[in-house]
Image (cartoon, rainbow, N blue to C red; front, side):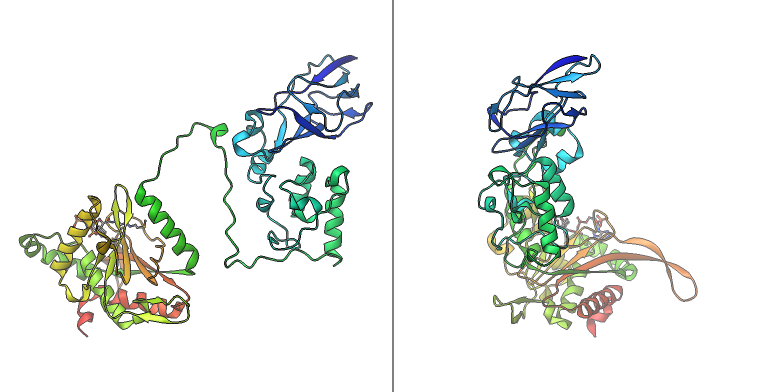
Length: 451
Ligand code: CAO
């Protein structure tokens, strides 16, 4: 037999941390890593595990006593001469910045806990069907819910998490309203028996967006923070607004541009003479305008009430340009009135201005439909984000030679994948696929534009 003094181990940057739970009694037999007591600061709840197996003797701490590293907790009588090495405290949900280094390196449970700061009930774990996460508007059942923290030990929190229960709905029966395991189970029982209403699912529109967890990555490896470019900050806000406000559908397709490519090659000498570089994009812009004329709901915007469509009688195509500082979408105006060489010239000019950071607000306004061409880079398909208040956008991917069945044999054809994302409030799926089918037909045979 050997009596070991159990001192509070390093719990990171915490001082005078109150004991909120003593989980053992003198004479209890404990296993190594079994929790002995729980500390709770305003930022974290930590279980302090036994460093060795043995019998608990001489408990030195009391509830609410404030502890620091090295404070005597109790003695542990061990059968063997096992050294009492203080293991890392198991912190549940510390605020990221204050996360104890040792705890951060701990098990996956702890990692998950970091996603659910206990000081932020709204970020509580995903809920089971009986108690879906939400209920932000519902009156809390738990008296503690009005405060920022729910008092519950990490094991109770884990238990609630496993059962999909949000602690803010649970009334605690322990000292100072502390939530016990039994309280979580009683809550589930009450919901199942209809004595308590399960929290209602949120009305998502306008109900706010759940926050992405804030994580301190430093415990996992080296990091570096870099300021986003001004353009990325601006386009990020716009893209987020478009993504959140528009119910997107993306229709994928591919078209045979073998003839288009032959025509483009035949224009090469003339284009050089005119001082322009002819890529497939001007052809696509012309075909898009034709398709927009045939499907005017794609060249439109919803009015602010969302109940009327504003159809536009002009064809200004925004073209996404990749610049060293980020994505910009300058607009080529009146594409219906421009020839292929004019379009190539205009494209070269605006993309140069974009890369030089010299676009004016006029260059960026008045678009009716956008094209994002990644065809010069690669990829097979992607899902572009509609550039609101427009209602549709075309994405172009890299054309490739492919064997295409012509009814009797395979022929090598140049096939270009493309996708159209659209606002499903304005455009139905059938209209979406009619548009892409027509666009494909126009690109396959440019003579279709004359009909
Ligand atoms: N399939 C195969 N090759 C293609 C192609 C396609 N769909 N589209 C262009 N190409 C070829 C061009 O013909 C050119 O080849 P050659 O020099 O041999 O003729 C080469 O790819 C490069 O073209 P380009 O990209 O310079 O010119 P472009 O007219 O096709 O595009 C512009 C102009 C401004 C759209 C483009 O430079 C650009 O910035 N693209 C990126 C857009 C972007 O970032 N979109 C994402 C937005 S969402 O984050």
